[in-house]
Image (tube, rainbow, N blue to C red):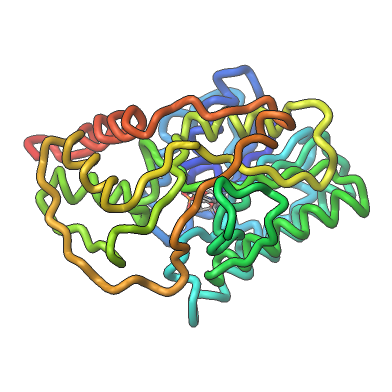
Length: 318
Ligand code: NAD
């Protein structure tokens, strides 16, 4: 057995699992098919790999599965399972974020410490920065999350660093900046914009449209994940941005989606929501040096690929 991918049925997890299998690795994937968004979509994400002879699916919750058993025969871990999304992380939603992002990560790290693995790469987030003062933001910037989600991702990241520096668990935390592309989560803005444009429904836009993001194409993120799993000389406890220099405001994104789909987008303007950072933009200098990774997909090309995929998902005649 080779690699454990947690959250294998999710957006980033399913793409990375496919790629690892295509490269000849054995993959044990684990997923709880949580209902944060339609679990049926997650099952569909895995359709192409379920029968692969080198793929084993463990369906279950990392909060209760035996993590030592999961690591049996595993050399490298890609820990992507988590509770994503900023808006649902306030109030009663918070408990799921603590369990799925913090507690689960600590359980896996303890098991990795006990069993010993070659690499433990974990999904962190640009949300740890909050409203950063410097752009493009380097990893040395003091993280100041502006959402409970960001707080839990930062806590998980700190745990990875602690297990790296104290016990030599070879961890690397990847701060993903807004990932997009085919199979993107249904709560994310580009997905909602494209779906609304193609279906002629309304897109609720929170804020005045001036918030801007670094958008990272999922195929580039898969490459970063592979580099994080296999690159030599990554010090335990490392933290690294996975970002794109291509940034855009929400208003620019609306125009891009309209141009790419050829459909007008009906926008319903709503007040800005608590927890959304005003701007994100990550420096990729460390990723280049540490992982030998750099993004290569321009935003317009990535959005075109996502639109093409979204058209395929439309019901026949739609
Ligand atoms: P996703 O929701 O599509 O995938 C996460 C998967 O983890 C889901 O399939 C879910 O069922 C599974 N999962 C959650 N809790 C679990 C548990 N306790 N046990 C087993 N499985 C569980 O999300 P994604 O967009 O693919 O994100 C993957 C990771 O990357 C997450 O940790 C997320 O916080 C992080 N991230 C994503 C983005 C992005 O733009 N997509 C940006 C920053 C960070």
